[in-house]
Figure (cartoon, rainbow, N blue to C red):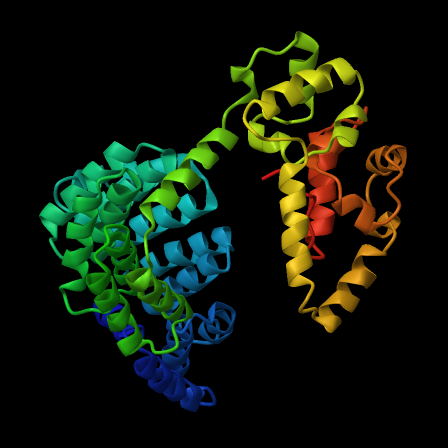
Length: 422
């Protein structure tokens, strides 16, 4: 089993190694001997072809490796109950009890059965302070429960017992990163990459931390190491371009200050201003919470809401005008930008979009309640619908969050969305 884990690491250490191994597995696909079928099945799993691996392994001669890798492949296919059965069956053929118990715990964790996880881990609690893998799996369980400090304690214990436990190092680094301890995260990621193994996730996460710290050369070296072994890694290729752009980016401090001030102004909550109870309640119902939200809606749209009258409108306009802002301001800016882009039309895309937005909303197959609410707003086509905001739809009687999510999901399937107030 240790040799198979080492083989898996080697196969995933580079693109050339993976291609070479894939070719070797392909050559053995037609062989029918017991060992060849087993080896091919395990090879397919290592290559990430879980379904094909299951098909091969089921034909192999019964042994602990067969049932362990069947368990792994079925787990990857989210067939957790079958995975557990096969892992348990491997015990009949001499599989290590502790390793199988921990793999079962990992499987239950992925299935979301925390009670079963706790039971499996409790059965091998005598390995506390003895087994690094036990503490790693206990850490993963605590992390899944949201007990992050306990998780980190267990990862640290795993590393005390086995300093080169790569997965414990990675998850400890990741948790430090998420908790804001970037120095510790960098240190742990550096320990992983210093082993010589090309751990892509660790290198990419380390590159991100270096870029955030403005250490672009170090970030580049991390990405270059990934590309050295995986020249077609898309995320690394894109990130490489981003880092190069960051190196040459000119920073205008004065311009940034103005931008920060404007952003802060637009994020000011409407609740900070003195408004009548009626105005405040109407805006809350429309989901208009900041000054920026008001710049994305027109006077006509505001007045179309129930109970929102001229008095409330005047209150809003006074607040905005005192800050050189006005209703619909952001919409006009977007229209100007769209007009500039329209000088270079993409005819095929326009035809496609035109066909899409001209479709009847009936084709979205919405529930009766959602369709009736859209009819009240006189929305007949998809184009009519995507010109509306969340707030406008929620302003209609009987149109709740459930109907809103239904509409969003339906138009999301065809690559569209409601008009945003952002």
